[in-house]
Image (cartoon, rainbow, N blue to C red):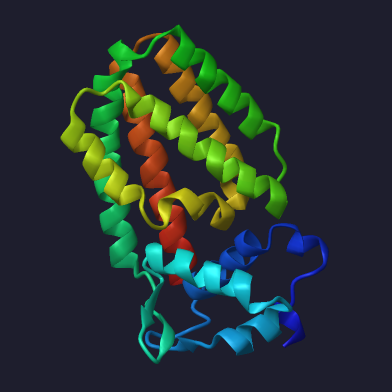
Length: 221
């Protein structure tokens, strides 16, 4: 039981820490389909109260990793490699197209904001506190890239695909941040150069590379 316990420092942002820990355990295969996550048991294992655990389970339900059932509580519904393949392949296609369409509509203010976000991401460390910040910055970076796209349906589809695992993948792929930094740097470069083709290519490659790393985690769990 001690191996699951969070340190005092970890408890600074409890809900995030609990969610991150449970997400990691689910994706690494510590649970089987249909396993129950008993609140009292896991609050004790993680050394926290039931409140942050309850909020964490709600977040994991949004991500599709658990299902909250009446009288049974949280039931594990792990994401499969097929799920990751579908989500990220669709993201690669749609976001690649959306950033190319969006590019002519991005102004200097958007470019300045992308630069600020990029600099902040590069300046962060890989500890859990910084990773929480990184995930927010990463999401904002990707959102700005497609904000100029006038096609509301494609943006709606992309928004749906982001409701789940994608915003939280940096916490699972902390060892690959240098790759992400380089891809983000190239995205920013091609935005400044107004190169729609190269921006589409690097955005697509960035998402496919993330997909492959996630699938590797799941297959090696």
